[in-house]
Image (cartoon, rainbow, N blue to C red; front, side):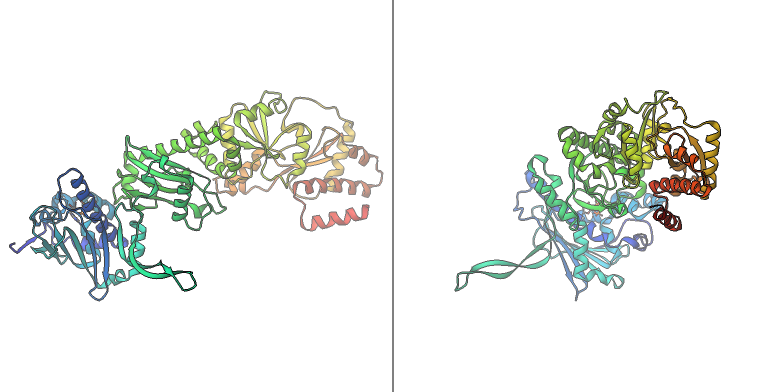
Length: 628
Ligand SMILES: Nc1ncnc2c1ncn2[C@@H]1O[C@H](COP(=O)(O)OP(=O)(O)OP(=O)(O)O)[C@@H](O)[C@H]1O
């Protein structure tokens, strides 16, 4: 073969400094690019063989990665189709055929490196991010092909000559530059391979490892073992998402999950994704058990393209509310070098997003339908997804209406329709509105809950971090339905049935009792009224208006309601005119004793609200001790 020198066809001084600079933050991807090229070359050989266009021995497909610290080289070898000198010129020298001018033009517009590499097929050239010189030794599968060698020192000059490879395939040899010597550490290369190549479809070997192997029996008949060196294969070449669900057992899904997330608890359930049209996508998504620290669990979905790992930033592909899912998505329609701007503007990505939302809704609907009991048991964890999805994805909410569950303080689960039917008889007010009651903390509000239950009202438990938003969402969505916290008012007013209870007190007595309490209550922000409630209700009830409390909650969460946040807390204190205590106080002639009774009743109301603390609690206890 004639030795040939030439220059890479791109009309610019030197493209490599640009590539190097551009890709600075992402140096390690050179290995992903070169290993994927090697895998592609092997896949091509297999395809040619299956088409009968290649009659030689296909051999055991293998990509072999070697590091030679002394020579400062990294070599990626494959037994794929190889290249002839002509093909090198065509595929390697002409940068992706795109033409230099267009390249430079796009280069100026590009927002990040991925866009450039992806668009121009610069995968191979990423080698120059870490190498001063790159050499290719290759032998094409074509009968009678001569081995070829290509060498380039990172300038636009290259050299092609006869090569030394004797078997079909390609070696890419990187002479690692001074700044990137850390890539000559085996552990570094192994960790990069583990990240990007873990599920490649062709075995990828990196050195050897020691394994112990049975070696007969010793004199006492016990089994003996010996150490053997075996190839260290990095990958599982047929990961479960490439198989048909019918081939897989639960245990396979669980094992795969454990392999991906070694320290995690087992997932609740999973969805096997498989779509061919209008885009290709496979994958397995897992619903994890939700831990308290939601942030830590985000970004656990790994995105692959033809089994090559791309990224775990899947924000634009997976709907926001499903970011807590775990697992793998693989789509060949997503290029290896995805860039943010690509993902945001790509039509396929939007379709993928819609598809995943639909699949998740299907799965939940199916679980709900086929195994209501199991679904309820998992509701604690599932509920977070469903409520988040309900709030943020109208399309999902349309489906979720049928399987979102409400849970009451007695731990019974209801669908929206079931709950409506369940509470309508007792909880419809005079204007025909349904009123749902809830508590964010059943323990703390036990007094209110029991009182509501005694009146035949049901109380929902809404204690998850999303429930504030979910309640507002439900209220907007459900017709003629109000949702009130169980301590938002006295029971008679929470659900106003238009019944008037006559008062046991005259107008003067009402005024008198009000004054007694006004004197006794020194705590600021208390708005005192005398109400005609049932005799069984508490003598004094402290409540906070639903609207006010919601505004304050939102202000506290940074919801742009800071005006409300700055207002002092305001409570309503309802004195029950019909409770025997009111008559007792009025009958008491000693002013101090009157005051003490009023104070005691007020403190009991605070106590029921969990508002009696510090010095107030101490003086209440002391006063109570004196009374007994
Ligand atoms: N190990 C190899 N064996 C055979 N051919 C190869 C090998 N590596 C590269 N090539 C050839 O060189 C071409 C250019 O490779 P390069 O990585 O630059 O771009 P690409 O693989 O086509 O696209 P990209 O990597 O950006 O997805 C390949 O398409 C292939 O034809």
